[in-house]
Image (cartoon, rainbow, N blue to C red; front, side, top):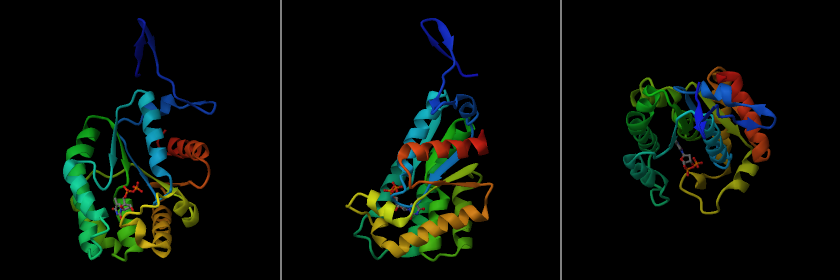
Length: 232
Ligand code: TYD
């Protein structure tokens, strides 16, 4: 049981959302690996920060990662990947750069955190590569998975939470200064979305889909319910 001490008195942290106390199940998240993923403009990063804050309030140590990036090597790979000047980048190069960033992240952050019994909360992971370079870009799933196994080894998520949103709502949420991936257009992004939904359908134990078209509070509540059902 995680406890704090205020003015000499012991207390157990409580995380209230709506009328529910979420602290007990959240304390069981130590040592688990959860990925938040979804199309550009799905609002996943807002939910990600809110969830990380809530779980920390329950007394769990949380390692947050973001992709591409999250390490100093990964941030340099990110600059190459997202710079609109690199429009000639081939799909295989692109996929392998995402994976190279991820391999470094696994080695430097994810694996050590899991070994210490922390919750690893990842903003994007292999599911992004399957959606963007696979379903939308056209690379075969088997190729991506072969590289993913080499890059991630046994660092495989306990749960992937997909924030699903229609393209029109997603486009309205994006900063008008689009990066190289965001510039790829409506048809590409429709395939990205379908790619996420297909992954979730093919692996119902490993994925949950949250309707992210509503307001942030509603999305947060339904995400908490889904995650609790699976990991609580
Ligand atoms: P970023 O600005 O981090 O977007 P977000 O806040 O939506 O995560 O940009 C990451 C971009 O890289 C995003 O458009 C998705 C894309 N991406 C891939 O195409 N493949 C991948 O494997 C990953 C991790 C990201």
